[in-house]
Length: 147
Length: 147
DNA sequence: CTAAACCCTGTAATCGTTACAGGGTCAAGC
DNA sequence: GCTTGACCCTGTAACGATTACAGGGTTTAG
Figure 1 (cartoon, each protein chain N blue to C red):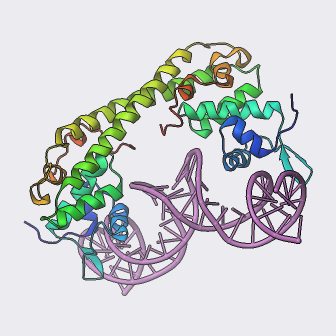
Figure 2 (cartoon, rainbow over the protein chains, first blue to last red):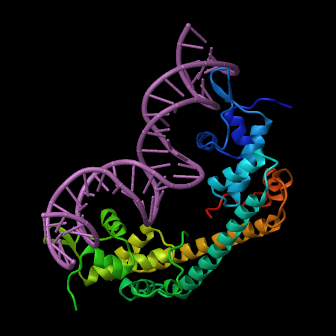
Figure 3 (cartoon, rainbow over the protein chains, first blue to last red):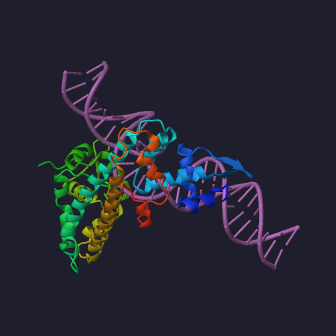
């Protein structure tokens, strides 16, 4: 079992690019690791797990700020972890709202797709719909959705 | 019926901020409008409709590049509009994939939420799960999802 | 005559990641 | 020895769309 990993090996083991790892360090999610040999970053097992934690959080769609809060809780095991539940709950709710919004968008798109095959732009249903001045979705108050 | 609108009025009428309108102009989605009085931008009805087109596209989650392509089709009414259908279809497929991914994320989150009420961080189910080194979702190859 | 409400331009911030530029170090192969 | 390639370092800029400034000018209402 190896003790020390340079950033490239950490990258392949965690599926996290070296750039991202350095980025996390700059943001304070990772404490600067020891430097060995020629000033190369030298990570230990704990750092690997911490990066895994971050990647798992990211794969769940959490932003780095939330992950940082979760890591802070993890670093202080005596803390009340209600905050962790709040973060996860808030994010879950956010996801559910996004899903509903995206489904509305998809529904609206399905109504216009495949309606203009082979025609001229002048008669294109899609283009006409976009010029329509009140989109159904924003009537419902969906607003802009990153998609 | 008014003929000319300054950027602020266009903003309130279209729900598009003045900054965004100037941004669209810089990107070439809007042709630079005439300037009146003290060099203020002076929009006509056609420009209003064009901005409405862009906003509707954005509210559907289309990116500005796709919207620009759609506007180009609209500007050339004799063009074959298959490209419009392609853009809409591609985007719809993209949305559907995103929905599936987000649903997977939400499902994974639901399994950990409300599992640590009132406890200490040391025993927090959420934090423990994040340290778990193989998230179910990335096993399935979902990868990172903007959420 | 002054304060608020507009408008202008240009630049920088946001978020997370990637891609550079410009440099150093090391190992293998010729 | 000397080159090539694979690493590593730092710092900066790009991506996309929007927002927020700074620093300036004009008009209008009080």
